[in-house]
Image (cartoon, rainbow, N blue to C red; front, top):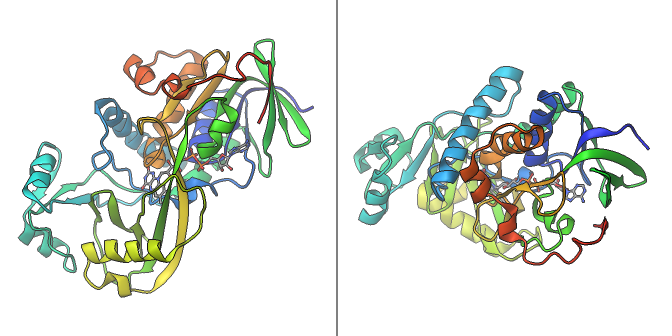
Length: 366
Ligand SMILES: Cc1cc2nc3c(=O)[nH]c(=O)nc-3n(C[C@H](O)[C@H](O)[C@H](O)COP(=O)(O)OP(=O)(O)OC[C@H]3O[C@@H](n4cnc5c(N)ncnc54)[C@H](O)[C@@H]3O)c2cc1C
């Protein structure tokens, strides 16, 4: 049995790694267990947009997202890590008068007429009703950001195990004994950040998957100064001269298969934004599973009736955007800092727990 720690974090995606970092930064001893490899789950599949406006769900989500973006900037300044932070912002297309009116409510966005869109983005398919530029909605490289959080956590003393599936959690007096493969570790607190697999760790938790396929194109020297966004689809310019085109939304699928239908859909998205883009060389294609909750808002908070057990999962389309703010909220709950009650209510995991079959047993196999 290894040394007891203050917190075990289950899951080495962007949520688990950022949580491990902020906990370690607060002076807690942390162990992170990942059943596969760090940053290889849904995190790796993400575009990396910090789309606080394009993904707006409600005001609580919005203020949380805005705070998270600031935390990314601070993290980058504090650590100097390369997280693929790319400025420019998101240009949201208005293809109808209704869409233009809906976007016009944001007073922190710049309106671009159709002519201005053409001038600023030469190759673009001009949106009939112009576009809005959200300059502060930058993007990061999801895998790099996740690895950077993990590296920063370990440099603060956190330990990390890969190929380390958490198979059994046993409640001790005010803490947990966690079986990770052949080893056992004890911790006062437990944070479940297992993405779509979190439902296996919290009995009765409602979590579904929405598959998304993306493709990465060689930009062939074409300079795209902004991310282009319309109705959940996008083209993201990466600093390495590639363009990420995404993404499909395939409800209820749990496979990572790349399909012809998915490729066709991505070609249609590419052409929607930049005519001819579907003929650019495809460098790679991939799929990921978005962890979806009952209402698209994440589950962040205490697991009901499980003392010192927390969940941070179900970030759906916004796990990269919300990771640092999620991590800080979990940290504040664990160390007893004051927390925003509106957020606690909006993200309460109770929303998604419909039966608690195993809650009365003390030992839980996962
Ligand atoms: C195509 C696509 C595009 C996206 N684009 C964006 C975007 O632009 N911006 C944005 O903000 N979000 C985006 N998202 C959403 C984002 O990727 C997710 O919300 C986020 O990655 C979820 O992170 P996570 O850490 O919860 O899950 P994951 O990255 O899946 O990590 C969970 C980890 O837990 C591990 N695990 C599970 N069970 C156990 C266990 N029992 N023991 C040990 N380890 C375990 C898994 O192996 C996995 O590595 C996109 C998603 C997709 C699919």
